[in-house]
Image (cartoon, rainbow, N blue to C red; front, side, top):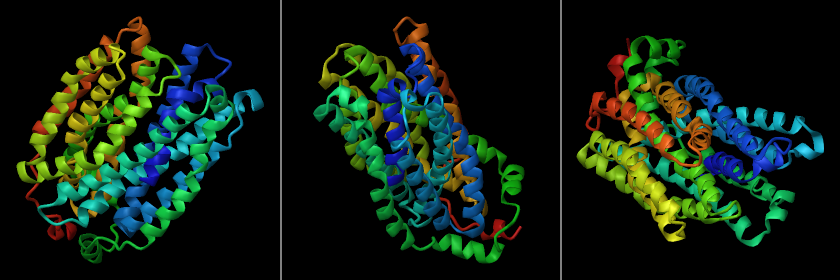
Length: 415
């Protein structure tokens, strides 16, 4: 929750604030594209973070990665909150923003795969979907905190005050949350399945080479499974906030309020989808989400174009809690089950982050560009989203059904 509060906070601020604070010398439309490009920079760093963190996780333990990523993310978020603006220091402001986003991407690259593996390895054999989905719920809570913070700002503080510096408040809350997170993570033991395997393998110095030489197919499938899910995630949590602002007016809080409601509902929808995947299999749930999210995009834009806050909220909730969560909830379990314990941290982490770059990382930037290219109409975005969904549907059809697999591949560990 605390880690993703920081990461999502940056995304929402990108959609609402950063183009006016750090890119004021540019035309408004170009400034928005520049802000989304800065947002995308964090995703470029995430695979590097996954490689680095995966090596630590597979050699030395899952907990070390989770503690390190939390500290780095908290420090970066706090620094964003105290950055000077473009009017104060000129181009140094957006340059510093880009650098901090890169470091934030490194931290997120270690966090997401690490948390997924940690939850799944602590789970019972027939409950990995449910317990793994709690990593998704934690991310949803982080999104709820982030979107809720900006909703409260928009509701109680004037636009002039927000642009004048009130936008910094949610960022400066981060240190308090990080301390609480560190206390929790410092007390949680390593998963037993990792401890047993680690005693046999003695740390395996060639984890990355093993992954790339012997588990390439699983890695490609894992990346494919991520693309549509992360595209849907950042479409609804970042771009939809921007699009609702375009339709209803830049000061509207309907978009961030809808995301906040959906984030709260994910506390229930994600575990529900995790249970469904434990009982019916990972593939069925995933295909429902991948196909459904692509088909639902047209109804979503039609709902937003009604300008009805209620219908806009319904669109965001359906997109996130029904279709997106059908993919994101079983994802930690399915990705973890694809890889043996000796390379699981690296394999899951790289699947998460390379898929994130190809899907969600560039989605706000590409979608904003396609919206402008389509003269304000979203149909090019629908086509782009559909093409990415085809990749995930293909991966889901080719990936093995793994719900009944053991996570104790000691025979492979001894090779």
